[in-house]
Amino acid sequence: MSKKIICFVNQKGGVGKTTLAFNTAHALQKLGKNVLCLDLDPQANLSMLVNKNYSSDNESLFQLLINSVKELKALHRSLLISEVLHRGVVDLIPSSQDLSGFELTVSAVQFPRPLILKRFLENSGLIDRYDYIIIDCPPTLGLLVVNALCASDGVIIPFKADDFSLQGVKHFYQVLEDIKDMGLGISPEVISHIPNLYDHRRKSENESLDLIKNFISSENKNVSLGFSNRSGILKSVNAKKSVFEFESNEFKPIREEFLSMGKTIEEWANG
Image (cartoon, rainbow, N blue to C red; front, side):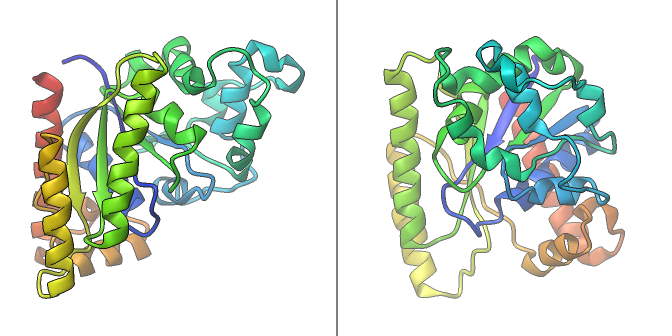
């Protein structure tokens, strides 16, 4: 299997993107894979889930990215990846508030700014050290997300079944077209769309989901079944644990659902 980079993207917040990225990373680890999480969101929610001792004062991905750009030499600081990397069940390169200034910091750079993350990952040797790199993106479609898309082989799109999500999915596909038009390389393949926090009892959500499915099917992409155990996911987030750290039968269905997602990713990676 070739090494794969996968980003979780949605310009809308509150869709469970970080939680899905976190548990999917643990599912892949349960399947015997070596996994690195990159937190590209200045809110650093993934960093707080993966590293329970996370502190925003620690060194982060931002400085590693800045150090990788020769034109920003005046901003370089001596920093090794090993000083930033948090080792655990899944490894982590954490985020910080500094990432919110990434776009402004690199605004005058001549090197293609959407390729900064891609070049960093290629030159750092991280791709060779992990089976999967999971990137959690901020809830925007700005430069950080474009960097993630340009660096990734695949993308997973969590969404809520509402009108806003339909617009968000449409905007996402437009960004993919823009990347192609800019000649920045091959766009990532959409692995799956995941309806999250979905309540089938609500008529409005069923109608919105149907509209989103119709649009996605026109793009020849698939929609997963989503995740049913809403309370289990919320409990795991509040405890800052993956669903695999709970042994009770209550969590068995959601563990199996995430393992199924991991196997879907494996099939895609090996296809």
